[in-house]
Length: 334
Ligand SMILES: CC[C@H](O)CC(=O)C(=O)O
Ligand SMILES: [Mn+2]
Image 1 (cartoon, rainbow, N blue to C red):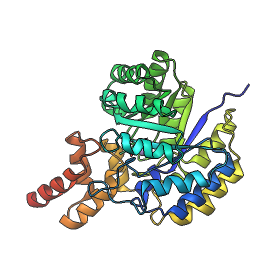
Image 2: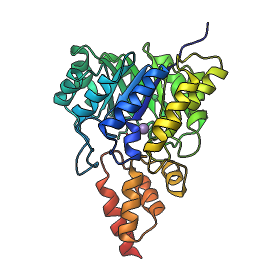
Image 3: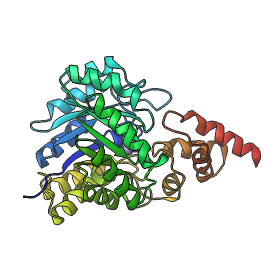
């Protein structure tokens, strides 16, 4: 029997970072229709920083979250609609709105040391009848024991699955293997992995995760996502099939979705560049990329220096405003 790997496509959420949150509701309908038709199990749609992310701090979305979700729900026949929520950026109000608009799954994303701030949202999601997944971000920043502790917290709150997330695309396969294997041993809920390609390892790390026991992996079409992007959904489908795992996704249809539907909508397709590689190397959020490029331009400094300094200061998601401070300081040092 082939093991079934659940593939969650986040082109319309992580991919929002790659288009500065400017997909239209028509884009959402077209991409969801193609993914659903290809057999994708779960499709995530939200602002790149999750529900409530549309703001000065993170960048405004082209449409409201409700309009995106209604467009997605209306274009789906079989897939489950998923949203991302970072407690504090999104609140129970956005979660209720999402459930009413048709979302069946929520990923409650916290910094890897802060699962406790997700307890309330996991419980609210369950009371709304949703599947609730704990999503531990920036898991390269702590050791294995800490990740295990935090994954167990999510399980104790009633999460249906828990993720080890490489937000910065900073880890190498052995680090993924040890983290996933340890979490898998410690919890009895499914374990997922979300990879970024800043160091060219997104597919390799996803394979390492699956071989270490992961049950769920994330992908985006054409790798659309923060930094150098994510593991490509269409590549995962081909590779997993070759490895003898079932995804339930039609390879030709997902290739068509990626090349014909998603690619023309990416004005700046993510790729490994000196800046996105620096994100992986420095271990900072992929979503810092466009902010750092803009600040580098404005203050006439090297974006790599900004990112390396952000890494040295151990900044985490939500500290995008510090990019300006760092650029300003670097410019004054010159
Ligand atoms: C800021 C939210 C973030 O983009 C979530 C995510 O995809 C990650 O941590 O990689
Ligand atoms: Mn991501």
